[in-house]
Length: 83
Image (cartoon, rainbow, N blue to C red):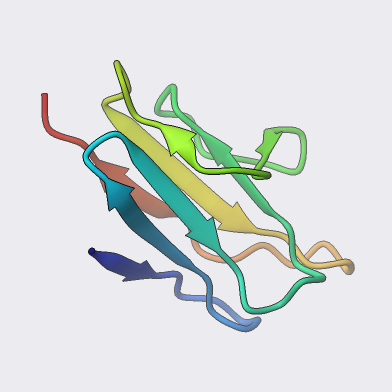
C-alpha cells in the first residue's frame, strides 16, 4: 500500500492505494472534508466530496484537497496513475 501525505496548514490527510482498482482518501481531521477531481482540474469546495474508495478504472489522475470549516484549503495532492 502506498500513502501520500497532504502538505497542509491543517492536520495532514493521506491518499492510499487500496488495491489495483481503488484508492482511499483519508483525513485525520473529521471536520476537514476531502474534495477531489479526476479530470485534471484542481478541486474546490464544489468538487466531488469524498465518501468512499474511488474506482480508478479509466482514471489517469486524481487531485484532492482538504477544506476545513473556515474554508482553509490544503495544498493539492496529485496522484498520476499509470495506464
